[in-house]
Length: 167
Image 1: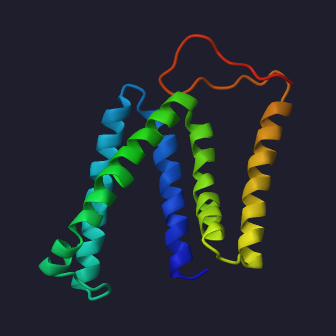
Image 2: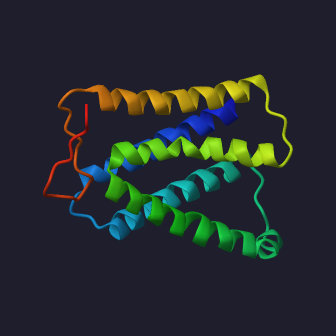
């Protein structure tokens, strides 16, 4: 696994920690949790980017580069990040962290599907990855249904009736 694979693995671990971590803050609204985690993420990105630039590990864009790409930056900041993370956190709050984490597996599958539609011919490794991801999702779903008397945890922030699964 090269440095790209390690970065992706770190990103996945970060999403899992962030998603399951919401359960540790039941008093936080979805908006508050999203804001706090987004601010911490932005600070982390800024520190890593500035340090990498200072060490010469990455090129530092000039003001003209930023001005030329302002609309891409705006798109990445508002709909692709803020709205998407807020929507994901709301879904996780509603469905519960365990189900929310399962949705993370749809990201590589969606990318795979989009590239296939665009004409990319998948490699054996990519097809194997898709098959493993789908098999893990199905296995997890089937396993959780087989546990007799299993009581499904209420989604974060929900009280009242506890859902039970049918054996």
